[in-house]
Length: 370
Figure 1 (cartoon, one colour):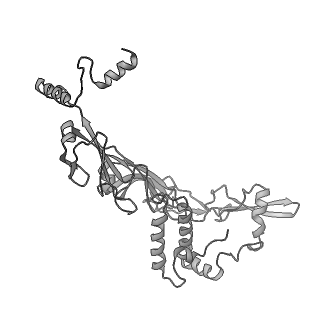
Figure 2 (tube, helix red, strand yellow):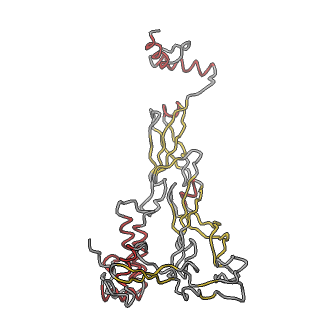
Figure 3 (cartoon, helix red, strand yellow):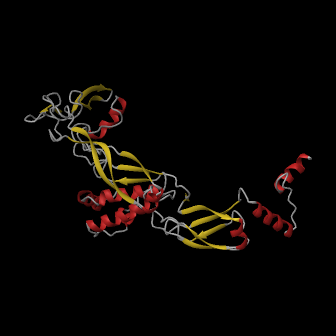
């Protein structure tokens, strides 16, 4: 399937400025990010948007794309010049090259990091800004990333001449073929460190506790994650850093529960309140709200308080709060209370056998043949 035009993907024209391209990308990235968009094709659309921005957001890549489109004029056999450039990868496949060559000195993006954060119920509902401490690799302050002892510097590898690769000649039915392999003397760095830095032992990086500011959006739910761009491990050879992914865990509330953007709460009421009706105050995360209980309300009846739930994390409105009535049966009745209830039962045409319990007990005894 052919790729869509990158300008069409971002919804900008060919004369769009760098700022316009960036603005369009950010808008679409927020819309299709898999962390917030649960549609089945959201991830593919997000990748398409990112790919388009990677090209149109870079002046050199953009100029190349404007001239050649999705086709690459450097593809094909013979593109590499005098070292069998186009055929090299094919011969590598047959003679142990691993299916392709990679420049070991090329810039590489750093690894992503993951951090698990536990939030209180209210913090997830309303959001918060906080600082977290995570262990991550940073450039060594002693050698400034060179890995060499101060006052010295890395030397060029004498085996590969600083290329990080060695040419290996092999005789094949097609003739003599030259393949490139990573130099095992310098591990592809092209450098040799004679006097290593005492702080980082020649690695050029040290592990530190890094403080990172994180903005938790209102409405985030248990299990969702936040991407903090560029806060992962440092890149290699000048490559960009990775990203930090903050995975959210939400603690349970004392009496609220959550389902999507809706809040649920059980409201205990007395027999008198549901029988005669009442006006009560219901606690919500947004303050107390008055609620009328009609006379004759049954236990388990659900009332909805519109807009008293959770703000949608993607900005799609506000949830509701559902209030479920639970009738509380009184215990330890006084003789006066019992007498009034007997009178009530008599007026209602009920016959209560107090010795054997309530009606439910009678039904159980009937099934047992008692």
